[in-house]
Image (tube, rainbow, N blue to C red; front, side, top):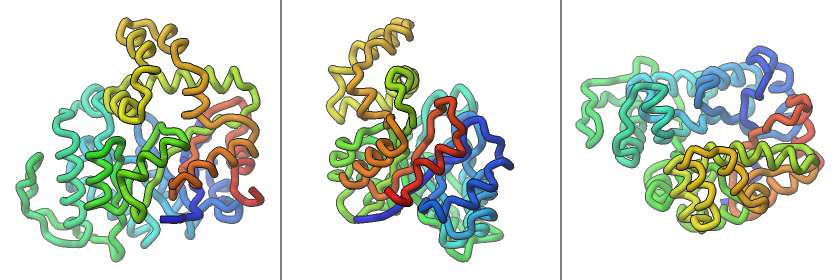
Length: 320
């Protein structure tokens, strides 16, 4: 599957939601095709997209991702239907299991059977967003007589957050694509081999547009140790072949020594997983992901001290 998509992750760090209006209105002219949101402990995944739907009526919008545990099935369907009504034919609902920290520690939920919960939520959402009345005993939850009062005229595509073969194959078999995260340009080939050639593959790519290599690597190490010690990401990188090289980081983290964990991450791992350099160099590195089989890059700009709005302009694909 080929694509000329070029996405940006919003909101930008340190920029108030209303202050995004002017740059969002520029995005299409700059060559961006997509705006993707995230959901951890900042904004929710949907409110920024509601604003973008009004400000930029041609861009595709996507969640990457909305967790399948932190909203009930009906509420997740209603929220998705609302964005689909605002942006008919332009909204992609990305869902996934998220992580135990977000689900259990921050949202008082139970992180049980993530594969099954994601599969069942996908199947429920397919039915609910079509306007059908849903009464179903799924293996991980039950729904009784739910029907959307405002089903979207154009149901959104649904993509799955997927890191390893099981979820990637589920995305290929039942969803409209897969969304992945924290991988190198070379890793795209491995992931693409699992989903096949005809399934949309999207990924958030962390971009630190600075030529201060030490600063970029320092920030990259902080992020890598935070994410790659989460069990699902640790398992992902084991599958990608980084188990041994990341073992010293995992051991130091388990011992409670974050400084040692950061120091144990080799430079070449940081350079592979975090794009950095001048804006032109960063654009070229993101293009490598696409050349290796990524359909939709969703650039996430890391803070460098520069104006993030100007970095959106500098990283735009126009003229690359």
